[in-house]
Image 1 (tube, protein in one colour):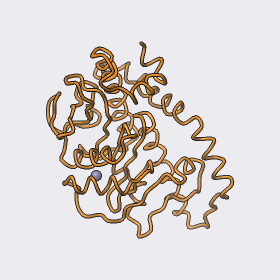
Image 2: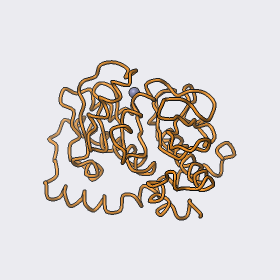
Image 3: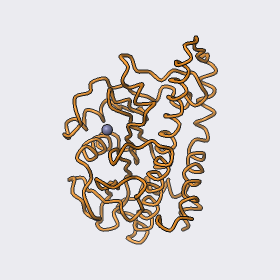
Image 4: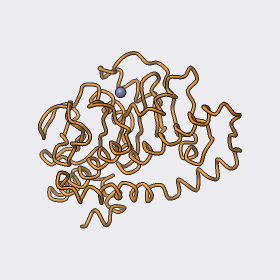
Amino acid sequence: MNFLKNFRSCRSFIRHFSSNSTLSSRKEINKEIRTRLAAAYRGLDSYGLNEGVCNHLSAIAPSSKIDEDIMLIIPFHLHWSEVTPSKLVEVNNKHEVVQGEGKPETTALCIHQGVYRKRPDVKSVMHTHMPYASTLTCLQQPELLMLHQNSCRFYERIAYDTEYSGLGESFEEGNRLGAALGQKNVLFMGNHGVLTAAESVDVAFDYMYYLERAAMIQVLAWSTQQNLKEMDKNVIELTTKQIHEFLPQYARRHLESVIRRLKTSKDFL
Ligand SMILES: [Zn+2]
């Protein structure tokens, strides 16, 4: 099966990749998800949304090594611009690296696995300290306002956590953040950053990009010190419906534009 050309059917397959899959199909799916996750690191890096060698994106995939589903994630100290599919490590549900060199940062393990434990429907989690969205998390009343078309894709999809209590270096904190996310797709982590959670790498990546754009518009609108014009509820609901009807396809095309660019560079594949 050509997974790049037919990723829509692949995605539905991935939702059910479990012990029913053959070893070769599991390896192919692992390879495909590695490529997409590595491209998400590179793409968000090109948009300036990472911070130093911190922040992390992950995805659930069948292991290339063992007969289990694992979490793919960046090893600590690797810059996002250096990520390739083969440099991602595989972590099992006991927090052990079962394939790859290096270990993830402790907070990465705690935060991401905390979300996956609470949300079996989520197959990709992304956490950044991207500047405009993180700015909103530092407000006493953090809220993404419905000011712009880009804001509408997050209508009723954001949870707000205002209980910042340190670096999140414990599994209890990961579980708390997972619970704070609830059934939403975005978590505003008070005084810290943001997290997106979705059924695929494509959608988690796309959410991250548009969340920063929506937050940027809000901060820039405030900077004018003029009165804001929020949209009417009917318009918000219509726009949200229109966006979400095709969001998986748009998200796939967005990430594939990054993959196309990366395939021209020898250091990616
Ligand atoms: Zn963080």
